[in-house]
Every structure is written in structure tokens, then in C-alpha cells.
Image (cartoon, rainbow, N blue to C red; front, side, top):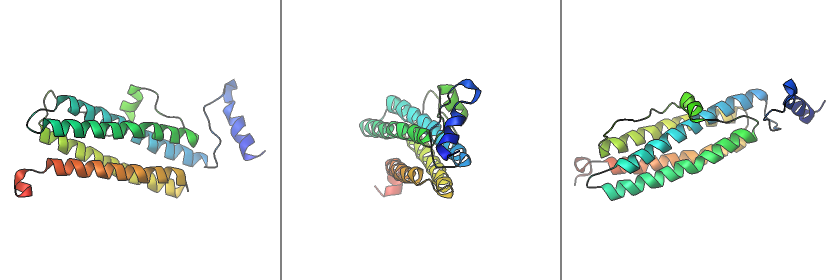
Length: 181
């Protein structure tokens, strides 16, 4: 029985077709990489919602700048969600299915406080992006271990985006004392 035939026969276990995509990756690779990408997907949604939340709630002298920054970053985050989920499917995995599933997988903490000072918003989002960068690098190592070049390449682009968001948040969060102005 060939590799594709084995995959297709797995699809029909228990009399019903499964969501499965033929891939040359091992089942261990599919399981491990899919899990790592689903955690990243959950965290991306969590940071997206937090960023939009801060976008809606920002106030103060830098309102316009921060409002626009948060909106731009939220869009960047949201734009990565489809690529993450589709990559999981391309390698034969299943992806998140609900808000509660996202909540179970996410490692980034939500912020439900009624008031958050603008500087605290910037620093919290900066830390969330740094956390995601670490998780993306770990997922990249996993992809490398399993010779999953597609996932590794996608993650390299996403790491660069997270580094840029982190840089912008850092620069925006610097106080006058830190900049000498």
C-alpha cells in the first residue's frame, strides 16, 4: 500500500471521512507542528483582540498616534491568522474551532481591566509580541527538526513582523527621560 493510499484509508476510520490532508510529513511532525501553530494562532487572536481593545480605549495626549498604531498592528495580526490556520490544514492537522478552544490554547493573558494607562498598553503589547516571537522561534525549531520548510519560511516572515511591532511599541513607550527630551 502506497503512502497516499495509507493516508486515504486513515480518512475513513469509523465509517466517516476525517479532515486530513495528504502530506509527506510524518504523523508525529503533523501533530507536533499543528499543535505549535494552533497555540500561535490562539495567541495571535488574543493579542489581536487586546490590541483592538486598546485601540478603542486609548486616551490622552498621544491619542491619535497610539490609536492609529494599534489599529495598524491589529490588522497585521489578523492578517496572519488565515495563513497560520491554512498551514495547519496543509500539513494535515486540524485547527482551532471556537473561542473556547482558543482560550484553552492561548498563553497570552487577556486584559479585562476597566482602565489601562497608555504607557501600560504599549508595554503590555510589547511583552505579548516578545512572547509570541519566542513561541514562533520554538515552532521554527520544530519545523526545522521535521524538515518542514514551508512552515519555517512562513514563521520567518511572521517573526520579522512581530519584531517590527515590538520595535514600534518600544519606541512609542519610551519616556521623555529615556530619550533626553
